[in-house]
Amino acid sequence: MNFVFDPSKPIAIGCDHAGFEYKTALVKWLTDKGFQVKDFGTYSADSVDYPDFAHPTASSVENGEASFGILLCGSANGVAISANKHQKIRAGLCWQNDVALLVRKHNDANMICIPARFVSLALAEQMLELFMTTEFEGGRHATRVGKIACS
Image (cartoon, rainbow, N blue to C red; front, side, top):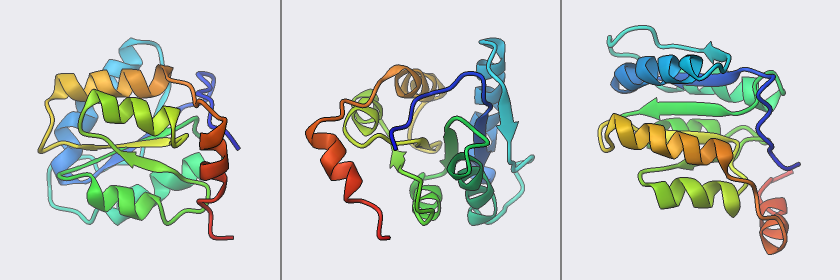
């Protein structure tokens, strides 16, 4: 099933303590643009365990409650690994614009994972904008994406 951004549904977002500052800024950035956002936490910079926030965020995308998801942590690896345990999730770890573009065009990602300790907030916003506006190419990529699920 191809992911298509549906602006009538909320955007799910979650993070750990390392991503809290960027999550707060991205929620404001998105709401200022008129988007609905469902914030799955964390709600402070106090140390937490990233799976506790990645799983509920991913579940909301997987069950169709949210249009797509955003996850942040220090490296984005932990949240990406956690989210990708969900069968219907394709979470792409993005650290530059070209990667954000390709995870949509070639991998039909429905979640973007941003490493808050390694990118600027301005770059995070740019990657998110690209992620939201880039369509899946389909074709040979659809065949490959179709082979991802284990079931």
